[in-house]
Amino acid sequence: MKIAVVGCGHWGKNLVRNFSELGVLAHVCDQNPSTVEYIKKHYRGVEVTDSIDELLARDDIDGLVIATPASTHYELARKSLLAGKNVYVEKPLAQNFSEAEELHSIAQERDIVLMVGHLLLYHPAVNKLKSLIESGELGQINYLNSDRRNFNPNHRNDSDVMWDLAPHDLSMMSYILSAEPTDVLAARAWASDDDGVIDVVHLDMLFPNNIGAHIHNSWLDPQKQALLTVNGSKKTAVLNDVFKENKLEIYSRNADGSLTVEKPVYSNDEPLRLECKHFLDCIENKAVPTSDGNNGSQIVRTLERCQKMMCVGTLSPA
Image (tube, rainbow, N blue to C red; front, side, top):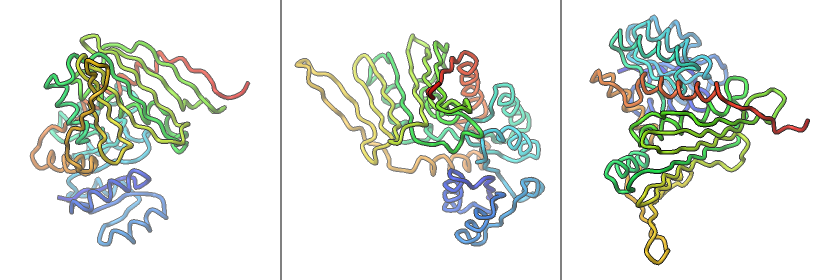
């Protein structure tokens, strides 16, 4: 099997590393001269080009991995699917629902793989949490809260914080609950600069069975945070993805008011490695990815609903 990675920036380099270690990386496409030199130096034998059309014209490439800026995802994924290539595209799948739905339809019509980079669906700790929820270990789920923050001004020219970070939170919540949100209750955002780009957002939504959920994303926090709390009628789960180990803890309150903390066991496999391997398995077995085009489209639809009702303020001085 031969895989080509399109876009070798900050995140693209991680994809290049993983597909190389899986023994399938054959081509890299990037227009940055320094990146091209980096690939040539560290990945001997891998062909490098600055033209995606050159890759699409080849018959020996089994799949394209698109890790370019979000604004280019739809165009590049559409072109690749129409060329008959299996496609893995980083989140978000597109920047509006109609485009995302179109990509999903093309993949279905041509019976080829379209997979979206919803990384947390392949995270061992997230999958452990999902199994605990499904087994009833936490009881009836009442509320979820997800805080995802960092200091990252690099995407301001291409996106905003909601489209950059919220796909992680939304896809993770929907996955562990096996349901999409039924309603967006509120969407409040702030822009810290004159360019009007949103870099802080708060989203409130409702899932089936009256499960409430809150998402807080920020590009203004120098201390990275990736924290999910799932409150159930019996126990509460806390998944702190910043921790190197014991990311998942389960809390229960005893009769005397004290807390018991459990640390579930799960594998230490790298989520991105599992995600990349899943793409290869889907190509080989003609299987539907866990994060397929429909999954990617539903996340885009919810984000679009949030955007339409968003109330935007400013954090900068008048």
